[in-house]
Amino acid sequence: MKKANSVVILDFETTGLSPVQGDRAIEIGAVRLVDGKVEQQFQRLMNPGRPISAFIAQYTGITNQMLATAQPCAQVMAEFADFIADDNLIAHNAQFDKRFLDAELERIGRHYSGQFGCSLLVSRRLFQQAPNHKLGTLVDFHNLAVEGDFHRALFDAQMTAKVWQVMLNHISYRYNIKDIPFSLMQKVAKTSKSKVATLLGQFEVN
Image (cartoon, rainbow, N blue to C red; front, side, top):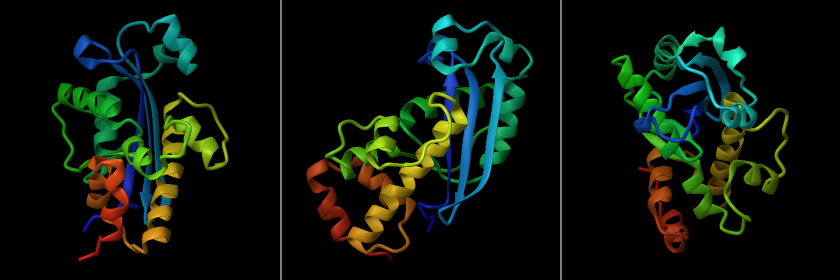
């Protein structure tokens, strides 16, 4: 059983919204949790081979000058594939990050064997009283310490890791589940809000 508190939590900054339309990754940040503790971190800028827009530069704080001296995407993503190993993966709005991870790794003929989970979907079900479920809102909602800037990949991954731990602690305390399987968090993400309490209340670790 792979545990939900031993995962790689990742975040991409990109040139746009869709790799299908030619957008590329420009930064990857990741945190490896082992038994709920941060064991390793990974952060790299990467050169997408073309200039980024003024909007993306303003949104992320990443400039064309910074990317000009960065390693190419292929080199960074090869290093990141090694970093992932066979761990399960988490991202906030995982659909977005998974698209870019898949696209960038496909370009270099690499893949990963872990499963993906989404902290955004889980938070919508566990913290239904939150104003919304954006990462910054959840950080404020839970009064988590902030040291850095949102929309930089490593910081967003670090904050997602903190929110993920809050969710695991919430489930452990409220439903008395000691070792939470990663597969259970995947089920929570796909369960309707009205049935999540029943799912967790009836869960038994095999």
